Image 1 (cartoon, rainbow, N blue to C red):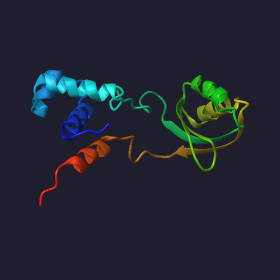
Image 2 (cartoon, rainbow, N blue to C red):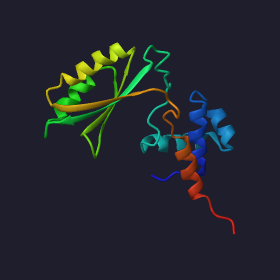
Image 3 (spheres, rainbow, N blue to C red):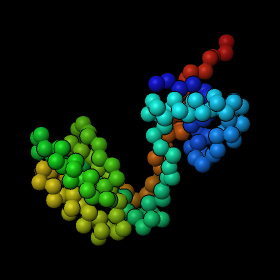
Length: 161
């Protein structure tokens, strides 16, 4: 799926203001409402847009501690472990990785003591051979996609001579 300048501007407008109505979105983009609707539908159907928020402040929800844990998994046992990890609410993400370890997980907790309990639940999975955990001290750049979207559209613009 390639996106053009209009797609990019549509995505960025919705990232800035997810509750924006279709009429106002079309007005800001300078296109007909049907065009904006068709573009949004195309972006959703292709999997470029996967949801409409809301984005959550985890610290404000009572989970100020974030940690990243690398798990080494017994060969061929990942599927059972994924079911185990999915049952732990504080496990936010799980990624297969190359390099040290097999899975990288992001977890949150209410305190360091709670993190200890969360990690104990994670480690209860019998498929885990070894782990390594790093606690995030500060978030300097939050998860973001806007620079990617803007960059993709900029690459597609015609160059002036």
